[in-house]
Image (cartoon, rainbow, N blue to C red):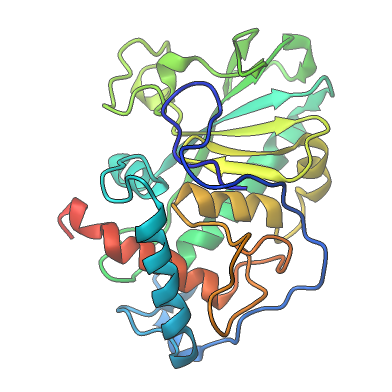
Length: 295
């Protein structure tokens, strides 16, 4: 589910329909294209194509997708808080706050495993664009800087590795201090954040007890807390991956399918991992926005 970039603390949709997502069938990946790799990156991962050169079978559907985005997004080029903007503002890093909207106790091990799982899912998207058309970062480290809960006793650790926010409620759920959030301070002024700019958060990972499906936007991602805990050691946490795609601007495909493709992550319920078509849509978004960074 794509919640368009939000401009208030209340969840709303600027355009488009909402629905819950879930994977209900086998992954039907788009045809693989070996042309997308060009050797090995410094990180050891396969390097992606350096320029826009999608496989022939994806040229038409990619063009259709971008034309659809241009015609349906109300402020496509004027909006300045996509995941891309956050990465570039931080010079290649991302900070998160976890909104623990549940009464289930969380151990230090669970905390660290959620962090590792989030890093792994974020990396899958970044690996798709590292080295492509001037994207300047081979990796984008993800750090969880805070946890928000109703009761401190829910978090069963005593170290100070993350900031703890208790009983700050927004949209009916715990949240980290607004003074530290990029959503609330897109000018980058974190002077009132208790931990300063280093402890600000760009996105929230909102984990809600009993929540089905997911939601995503410039503010972060929301999925079920039980789902996240159950999937935290999986290679692909497909609902989280889908919602991260929205944070970077990718659309949903509830009412149409681009010509000649099917079974891709952003078409909810049809794939459980990032496919080649998803990767090229992601790269396409970057190549249309990169000029705002002087690239």
